[in-house]
Image (tube, rainbow, N blue to C red; front, side):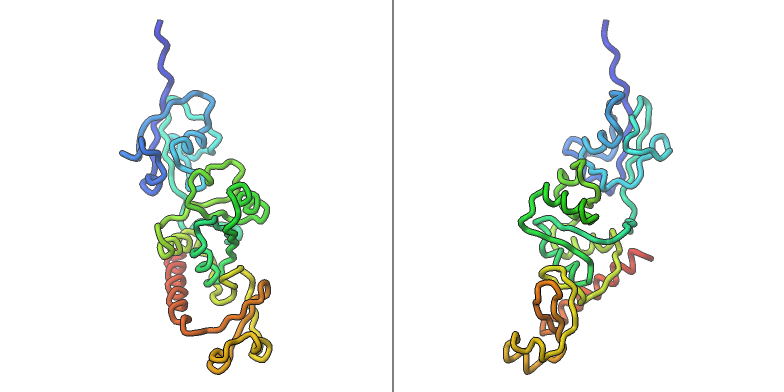
Length: 245
């Protein structure tokens, strides 16, 4: 006697999720998966390479289902991406070690952004969960860790693309020039006389308006580089406005 083959379900991924699919699946967004009666739909999707953090809706035969649903033979599954902008209770982020430049840019526009270049994966997950922060990373395996409660994949090879991707995905409220790019502390206006001993002679002669980080004590002013930074802020404002429209 020959055993009957395991039942199968059809599965179709939205084009936006194609980059996550494992190499054997990248020839197309669709295919078939075996239904063993034990594996959840969430497990099946992640086994094909797509982190659930990137999935918005799972449709089974046209009906929304939870990741715990167990696929049955003959099911037709559609995997849709998270909506943009993605609703979040509080747009507070934690970035992994490879996204330091992105962290500074997000802080420039006033987005609450934690970053520690020394933190390993386990520590990142613990910190993100404890502080209710969204963990941003390009490590797909990290996003598939079950302990992680909130996470998101950052698209783009360089800081400009990454910055635009995060702003477009979450459309966070912006408050430029209010956070320390170095440590994420809040900036507080200070009198020139209070920080004058810390300034170079040329800076004392040229500038009169200053702010100081309430956390690390660094002093900031709108120097020669401020025009370039303001251009980045203006671009961020446009991206967020377009995402919300």
